Amino acid sequence: MHRAADPQQALKEPALAEPGSGSARAHVGFGLRAEHYEAILRRGLHADIAEAISENFMGRGGRAFSVLERVRSDMPIALHGVSLSVGGIDPLNETYLAQLAELATRIAAFSVSDHLCFGSFGGHYAHDLWPLPYTEEALAHVVERVQRVQDRLGRRLLLENVSSYVEFRASTLAEWEFIAEVATRADAAILLDLNNVFVSAKNHEFSTSQYLRALPKDRVRQIHLSGHSDAGAYLFDDHGSPVSPAVWQLYEQSLELFGPLPTIVEWDEQLPELSVVEAEAARARALLSARPERRAP
Amino acid sequence: MNLAELQRYFAQAATSGSGPLPDLDRVFLGSERLSARDRLAIYNRSYFYRLLDALACVFTHTKRLLGETEFERLGLAYVAQNPSQHPAVERFGRAFPEYLGLLAVPPLVVDLASLEWARLCALVAPNPQQIASMRAIDSTRFPQARLHFVPSLRWLELDPGALHAFAGGVPSPTEIAGPRCGVAIWRAEHAALHEVLDPTEWQALACATSGAKVNRVCTVFDTGSTDDDVQRAFRVLSHWFERQWLESVAYDDAERRTPE
Image (cartoon, rainbow over all chains, first blue to last red):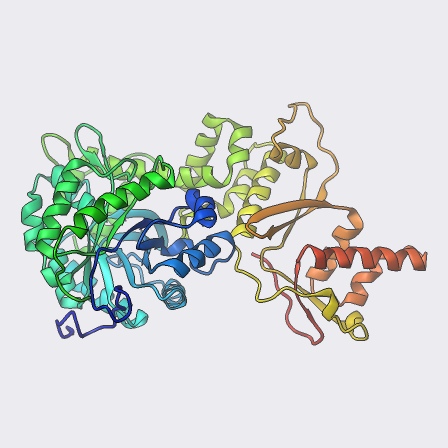
């Protein structure tokens, strides 16, 4: 069963722009990290939007939730998950989905996203983003699960492309074909992680331009930027450094292709001062603001 | 191989403690630059060290006491034997204190790990729906009431040396374990706190958290000296209110809450 493929109409997707403006102006922010909580509680954030890792706030109270509420009082929040395992063969975790739905409602999240991968097997969580074989069987499986998640959440899910280090011989589709097909058939949206595109392109020797051009323009709704490390024989997606010049170039290319999309800077390892992350976001904002508006969200 | 078989194979390769499986080249693509085996090894390494990092974030004092090398050895063995069952990675260490307790690790270290885990649980526990106020007590019905505690409150019996180690001390290898003490762990504002309770208060807390009515809890303070006993019971119960350990005072037979 496939949904109507009109991404503007089929599922609820809360507007990000200021009420009544109808404008997709430059919305740039970054991910909330525990190391910054104290600074956030003290002086707030210099950002238009913020991203919260869903699992860090589900069913929780205390400081983490106070920070989330504090940030939410200042700006819209995107929820970004890492453990949905939407491509996995384990049954979807209904408790997890219920808590995610409750959290999304409670903070009126402007988007809910997770990764196009699997991260659990046999009832155990990997806490990693494992790649899928890009086969017709996997495609049908993922589409059905994304639809179920969207039905459960009552909103469109954004799916993020992951970095990968290995490919399955069984794959019959390119990664970009797979993500485009999943998004279209499931009426989902795409969270385009440009660092992941760059890392995977280097590791598997494909063209980043080909990847970007193959994505359905009206499905790409958000962008992630982050840093990676060079391990010599491969690039490693560690979110532990500034966005690389090559990824900034991809960002400019993406803005050209997809318009001014909400953009999140992610930084997880060797986390610097909050102001350094804010400066990365400011750089993205400058590039994004220089682009003409594309369309209302 | 179908999707399920491919995922099973990948999961085995990525989580195997004894290195990647045979036949990897039949399932995965390699290149001149990086073989399929090397590529799977990236996932394998990430799996073990990401979870080891998750343990290190929670058990910082336990790690200090064990030393980097020993903590890594024990932590990686825990990762291999205790796959994560919770979507939030910070919950991965739930069984780590118990795991250490099964090994030839000094009991003091096990207690320190238990304390660190309890502090994490207190820190992330759901917010209470309300905080009970002493002023709102119905004094005529209070003896028949049951006390409901805030979700963040935990209680443990620990070797006092574990508390000393948590405070930054380094126990001597020849140190003889003292009598275990009752410790309450809770969250105040945004911080996890813990406090040693005297044996009578510990007994009263155990009684109250098991669902006993206030009049039953107060029998713990019974020494035969009525005035002193009443004053002492009043002081302890007041203390619980002051520290905001109480979510509500239930005058019916509502279910008691058991902490995680």
